[in-house]
Structures are given as C-alpha cells and as structure tokens.
Length: 478
Image 1 (spheres, rainbow, N blue to C red):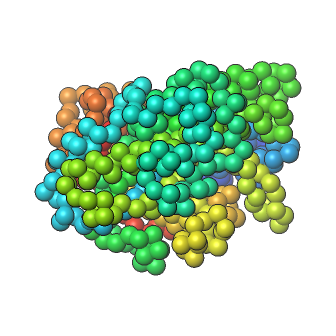
Image 2 (image 1 turned 45 degrees about the vertical axis):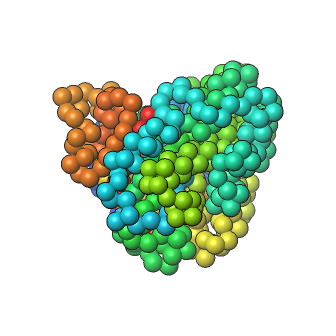
C-alpha cells in the first residue's frame, strides 16, 4: 500500500514516488481512512498520477472505492494540449448521473398511499438488465438523442423545456459526434431511452427531513416534509459499448506511442490526437444520450405518480431541481498555479461542485452555488449540497457522488444469504420493489459507506456545504 500522511482532519497526502508526476490527495476522516486500508483503490490514485499531462494532484473523494483503471470517486485534470484522455477515467456507464425533482406534495399527502405508489412506479418505469422502453429510436431519432441530449426527449413529449435550464450543461455536452459512435453501440441504445437498467440505478421517492442551509434550500425550492423524486441512471448499453470500443483504440495508441503505464486499464490517448478527439466526441454523444434517458425517465415517473395518487400534473407540481453527471470528462477552464488553463477534467464517480458566481450555474442558483446531489443507500439518506468556492481551488470544482461501496457485489450477496432485505427495509419505513433478491442483496445498506459520514467530510473540507437531507420512502430497483 502507498504511504500517506494526514494534512488535516479531512485530507490525506500521498507524496510522489516512482513514476508519479503529481501527489495524490484523498479526502477522508479517520473513520474512512481505516476503510481505505482494506481497499486497494488508493493504489489507483497513485497509478493515475503517472499519466502524461496531469496537473495539480490525483484526487479521490471520500466515497472512493476500486474501479476500472481510475478509482471510483477519482478526479484528475489534464492539460488539454499536453495531457491525455482516458476512458477508465470516465467509466463504462458514461454520464451515469442523478436527477432530483421536487413536488408540491408533503409527507401527509402520500403517507397512506406509499405501497400503491411503489407498485405503480415499478409497473410504469422500465427496469432491469437489457430492458426496452416505449421510445424506439433509429436513424435520425437516435442521432438527435446523441446530438441534442435532454432537449430531444422534451421534443418527444417527455417533460418540459423548462427542465433544461436545471441540467448540467443545459442537458447537452458540446462537441458530440454521433458518427464517432459504432453501429454496435447504436444497436444497443436504440430502445433504451427512458429505461432504468439494474445494479445501483434507481427511482426513489424521498421526504426532506432536515434543512441545514435555509438560504440555499429556499433557492433550490426545498422545504421540510416535502416529497421529492430522485432518478439515478446513465447511458445504458450505448455508453458501455462506447467505452469498450475506445478502450481498444486507446490500447493501440499506448502501444504505438510507447506510453508507459502502471496499469493497462489506464489506456489513454493525448487529448489533441485524432484518437483522443474522437473518443471525446463519442463520449459526449453517449453523455447526451444519458441526459435524454433521465429526462424520459422523469416523464415515466411523473405519469406513475399522477396515476397512483389520482392527481393532476398541476397538483403534483413536479419540477426539476437539478440533474448532474458523475461519470464524465469535460473541457473546462480552471486556475492552476495562478494561471487559467484549459483542462480535460475527469470525474469518475464524482460530481461537479461549482461555487457561487460561476456562469455555468443556473441563474436562480448562482448566488448560492450549484446543487450537488449525493444519493445514499436504500435504507439511510441522500443529501443535497451546494458547491463551494473552495472546490474551484482544490478539486477542479468537484465533489463526491454517493456513499461509495464497502463490499463487492459478490461479498454483499454472501453476507445477505438467509436474510430478507425487503422486510428489513420495510421495518425501517422504506418500501422497495426490485427484479430479484440478488439486486437487493447487492445494494443492501451494509454494502455501502454511511453517506452521512462521506458528506460530513465534504462539508468539513469546504468542498460543498450541506443544504438538505432526504429520507427514502419508496425505492424501485432494476
């Protein structure tokens, strides 16, 4: 294991050694530090520090755990001219992310109907591995989803154009080139817009049970006892295939250009190269597809809630608070050593956390900072944070994305053997619906770090500040 020292109560420092070009910094308190000893993800933080053109430090958020090449929870920025782009720094589920929507309803309005709400949500929202939805795209329609993102789903009648203002980058990443996406990826994505998938993806009904920052909560339109809806999904099979395709391209590039890597899963290409540019264009297309997917999923969930509660769209009042990506590489400008530099910022299992005043933040939120959405596990809590100025200095405007796994999926299934996870959650006041028992076992609360601990580190380090805590009431899994 790499050796580290503690900088302060919330940060660990890994000095450069071997081929590391920059140090590593891991955000963790003493409790989370103990969990790192059993997880080799810290080695991946060091491995990332070997990549050409990396600036600042190789960073990891407190939800860090082992991933493909880069750790999940990893953040790394590379000079846009001299540095590289790596599919492992984005992940297979390109633009996996979270959408939070608020309603006009309060807990007493739904308390007696939650079981019925769970049943209708599970019936109306397409869930599971390889499932198809009711939006069938081919040819121009699929191209438009990859080029226009969430706006294309709106054009298909899913949600409102007003949603677009409250999505990261307006729901469309510039520079997308659908022609850079393979025929196989297109085939896999043709029928999956508006589908949830499986694993840790979910649709969740929550109640706001605590407000920490009244000013920011008011700006975001959140209040105690309010019913909210959260959707977690990504680019489905299309994004997975894009990653797979370009890992092969990058492996050839590394070999042909004699780039020395400590781990072949870090396959990369210089961002300015033809291969690097083509990956970024394909990744942006997959990211836009994911924005369209979450936009359509929100439409499914809205219809399900209206039917289950027998209320009108006006009475439900569903409104997007924010939608943020947490598997992405983006071209951004950040200050490094007193100078503004154009960087390729990789966030893998990490969320953008831009502070007050940044033009990228919706105008209604600009005085408090960007909403940062941090879902937890099925049985505990989720959090809404607000981006802080310190993140712009220390983490390239990045924060954590969730609780972070403690147990592998196989280990969780073994530990859950003989237990009835759905019954346990029901006793805690959480109604779950899922395809099978293994899904619930993989995703049981003990498989994850305590999200409250993770968020406390982010808040204490000043990367983002706590705004509201959401308690789960209904969870639908694939």
